[in-house]
Amino acid sequence: MEAKLFVAVAAVAAVVATVLGKIPLRYNVRNLGVRWITTTCIVAAFTLVLALLTGMQALVNGMNKLTEASGREGNVMILSDGSTDEVFSNLGFADIDDIANQPGVERDEHGAPLCSKETYMIVVQPRPNPPPGAPKRRFLQLRGVEDPVMSGVVHGIELHDGGAWFSSVGVERTDIEGDGKKEDLLQAVIGEGLAGELGRDRAAEEIARAKNAERLDVGDMFALRDRRWLVVGVMKSAGTTFDSEVWAKQSLVGPMFGKDRFSTLAITTASDAAAREVKRYFNNDYTKAALSAYVEKEYFASLNAVNQQFSFAFGFIAFWVAVAGVAGAMNTMFAAVSQRTKDIGVLRILGFARWQVLLSFLIESMFLAFAGGLLGCVLGSLVHGQTMTSVISSGQGGFKTVVIVLTVDGAIIARGLLLTVIMGVLGGLVPAINAMRVRPLESLR
Picture (cartoon, rainbow, N blue to C red):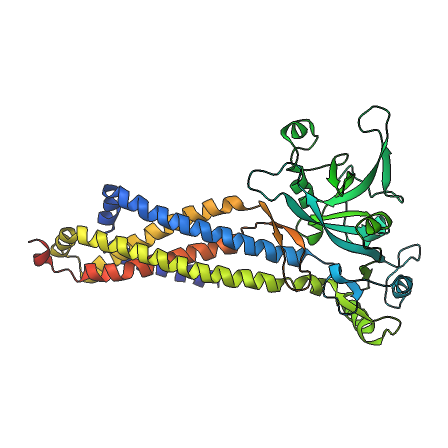
C-alpha cells in the first residue's frame, strides 16, 4: 500500500515538474523583483486580510473551547421552575435537603450527598484605575456557596498552589495597615481569568511590589460593595465559565446583595445516562416542588447558539473581505498585464504557448496570495493565548461575563491558506486569460 502511494506521489510530482518546466517561471520570478513595489502592495493586502480573518476565527474557536470545557459529565443543575438561567432562579429552603437526598445522587466517603448549594448573582464593581476611555464599571459574577470544598469536588475545580478554600465563617480579621486596628475581610476564591482582569486594575506601584505581576494572587485584595475582599485561593479554571467568577460564603454574600435564597443545586450522578434519568425525574416525577433540571454539559453547550451567531457574522464578513481581496488582486494583475504586454509578446515569439503564458500569470497570482496569506496567518497567530472579556447575552447561561482565550489551531491556519490560494486563483484567472489572448506582433508595435 505504501509502495503504491509512493509511486502515485512520484508520478504526480513528475507530471507537475514536466508542466512547470514548460512555463516561463524565471520571467515571473525576475518580474517580482523588478516590480517590487507592486509585489509588496499585493502581499501586504493579503497579509492584512488573512490576519483579520485569523483573529476572528480565533475568537469563535475560543468560544467553542469555552462551551466544550464548561460543565462536568454526570452533573445535573437544578433551578427553580421556568428558570433558564441561574440568575433568575430562586429555590425554596425547605426543598434543598430533600432534593439532595433523592435517589440517583452520588455520595462521598462520609455518606454526604455530592451536592453543591449555590447562590449565583451578577454584581456591579466600580473599577479603581480604569484606563482612559475604558468602562468605569464591570459586571462581576459572584457565586455564594455553602461548602466550598464540596462545591470544588462537584465541579471538579482545584486551586493553584498556595491557595485554600475560604473558612467556615468566610471572614478573616486582619491588621492591614499595621497600626493595630483590625478589619474584617471577606474571604474569596476567584477564577484565574478574573484574577488577571482584577490584577490589571492595580496601580503601577502596587504591581511593582506584588508577588504576581500578571494577576491577583493569594493575599491580594480587591474592593466590592464598599468592602475589602481577601483572595485566599485562585481556581484552576482556565477555559471554563468559572474562570470569571468570585466564590464566597453564601450566608454572607447572599444577604449583602439581596439574594438570601439558593439559586442552584449542582448534583453529581454516576454517569451521563444517570444524569439524564435524574433530569427526567426532577422535571416530570418530582412532586414536592416545581423544578427545572438540566444536564450540566447540555446546559453550557446551549451557549453554542451564541457561537453560531458569531460564526454566521464571521462568514458574512469573511465573504465580503474575500470579495474585496479577489477584486484587489484582479485589479493589480490587470495592471501588471497591461504593463507587460510587450514582455508577453516576446514570450510568445520565443515559442511559449498561450496555455503556458496563462499558467505563468496564474501561478504568479497564487504565489503572491499564498505569501501574503502565510504572513497573515503568522501575524494573526500572535493573538493565540490572549484573553478577552465578553458578555453572553442570549440562551441558557446568558448574561454571564466570560473570559475567552483566543485559540489559533491548525484547522484555522489550513482554512486561511486554502482561502488565500482560492482568492489568488480567482483574482488572477481573468487577467491571465487576458494575457493569454495577447497577439505577439501587435504587442510589439
